[in-house]
Amino acid sequence: MHKMLKKFFPSFLIYDENIAEIPDNYQWFVTDANDIIGIAKSELSTKDTAMLTTFLTAYQLTIPKPTDLEKLWKNRIHSNSLPELSNEKFRFIYFSFPKNQMEPNIFKTAMYEFFSNPVPILWENEHEGILIEQQGIQLEDSLTYDQVVDTLMSDLYVKAKFFIGAYLCSFKDLANQYSAFMQLARISASYSDNPVSTYVDAIPFQLVDQISLEQRNQISSLILKEFQNDEEMLQTIRTFIQCNLNISLTAKKLYMHRNSLQYRIDKFFEKTGIDVRQFNQALTVYVALLATMHKEHV
Image (cartoon, rainbow, N blue to C red; front, side):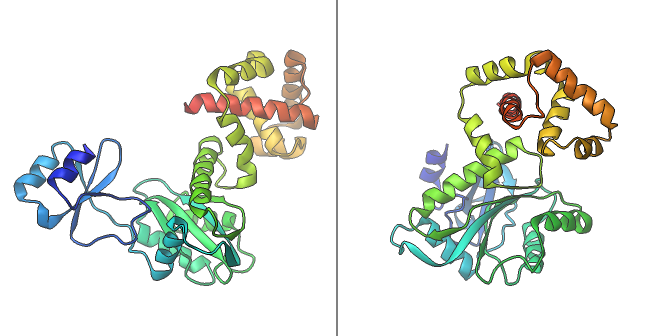
């Protein structure tokens, strides 16, 4: 379909992060595949627009125009002729929030309040993208992304998520690093409900994501046995592991009595022979839990 539209409308383009600047006087549409496409209004007659809306959905693009610094970063990411070293460390911070809950300009204004200087924001679409932290452009002193999430929820009633990448000090192969970062961020989002996570948290998710469906089923069945479809037990064990095998903290988080929690852990040991109070055994169970979660997402 894209080739056909390009043939009839030479100005046709697909919106993505490679566009250095959003062109004016474009009519935007969304395809069935959720691609945002644009055609210059000068090429569209009333009849053309009516015809296109029979199989496309008209769309109002509200992504802010990129600043000079954002254009610079887009060029850094997609250019192959840059010096290898950066004068300062930088890192990507992936963000997302539910569709249609907040205008991108409002999010941008909010982010500017949290940072020491205007932070570059590269939009993937109208509800996800990346922030770029660098020297002089960081969260205000003592502020954390967990606090940013809480503030966005309390002030704007928006449930945002952030994924924090590693610090980098070279522009070498930056396009591939950016692509790998975005892939890891989205894998993390499919496994974790935590509003803030890091690349370190996501490595186990990535490993499980690369295992075949047959192997995931085998791991789930072998380790979890009769509990592989018992959501209550799985949630209990998952929370226990996430709370660093701390009985008191887990009981508090699950609103359970310690004795009730201990009973469930003992029951899991009795039926599986695996003691999740031991780190190495808990690690194996965690992988099995991720394998089970992956099956829910495929």
